[in-house]
Amino acid sequence: MLGAAQDVLIRNALVHTASAQGSLADTDVLVRNGRIAAIGSGLAADGAQVVEAQGRPLTPALFGGISGIGLEEVSAEAFTRDAALALGQNAKDIVVRPEFDVSLAYNPDSILLPVARVEGIGFTLLTANSTAGGSIIGGQGAVVRLDGAPDPIGPRVLFVSLGGGASELSGVSRAGQWMLLEQLIEELRGKIPADMAMLTPAGRVALKRYIDDGGRIVFDVNRAADIRQLLRFAQRHKLNIAISGAVEAWKLAPELAAAKVPVFVDTLANLPANFDQIHATLENAARLRAAGVQVGFNQSGDASHNARKQRQLAGNAVAHGLPWEDALAGLTRIPAETFGVGERTGTIEVGKAADLVLWSGDPLDVAHTARQVWLDGREIPMRSRQTELRDRYLRAEPDAAGGQLPRMYPPLR
Image (cartoon, rainbow, N blue to C red):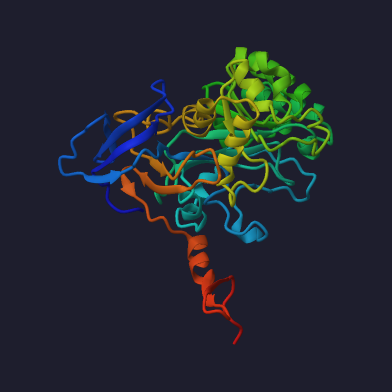
């Protein structure tokens, strides 16, 4: 855990609230007991530590995407990865275990947490991935704050993978995915004989929370045809869904807006990496938002080790038509609200947790950096293993003329 909360007055900032208040120039933010106590001009410090922002941007702490931060250390080392369940005896076995909860493996001491924190990341959604020997239902995850606390702060979320990339988990056909999902719902209704059941008793209890009780289900899906089937499926069963990936979602933007489905996109997906992404476009986020869709951001690559790229995704969306304020909301308020923690974090409002970032400049421009991060009003050390390695190896040495040359590595002995 980080140190004790501080009383802080951040003076004269450009406060991007990510709320209905929008952006407030020359504004102070007062933090007391880990909460935002006041927002305005000329606020009295009354004993609080004063930080002079000098007009720099202040934002809520950012969303690190749907990731494995704290669930993996080294991507290439299976022993350090805990985000997927494979109980099948061979890769083609379909083992459905929605009761699998990755948050039980979360490590708040992971070196990935400070790496993300110093980049302004304050919270992430732990993902449960589908994998060979499992099923299209990856399992459950939840939002964690990157403050070193061991437990999630939000409700559990169920993860389901659809489309061509998951067809090996559904009889080598994406049509099989809908067959399996319908059968699982029939099991919940007691319409499937015990000898044909796919769920354990615990699995039925877990799945019921999402099918009958309104829990959030995140579907990872890209192709427009599959998204269309998903919208029909969700409407038929009255499901509370969100979509990640969504490379071709722009083709169904009005339908997604009407269904009030939040969509988390990778705005760097501009080429068809596979046949589910033929209609990829850099304008995906802008087109979705113009139709009224709530748009957030999520990386399709190694999000756990590259959470800093979330800002790049948002900035790229702005460069291709998404309004700046909507891009910031996609990094803050929208994921917080979508995944059940919006009452606590995601905006700068009186009464909310003081999860704040002071930036050197535009936070959606990767040329700028986080100057200071606060989580629950605690000033975090702007230090990680990466900064320590930088400081150790990026040193200067004299050149022939007596000046200093940068040296990337220590001298050989």
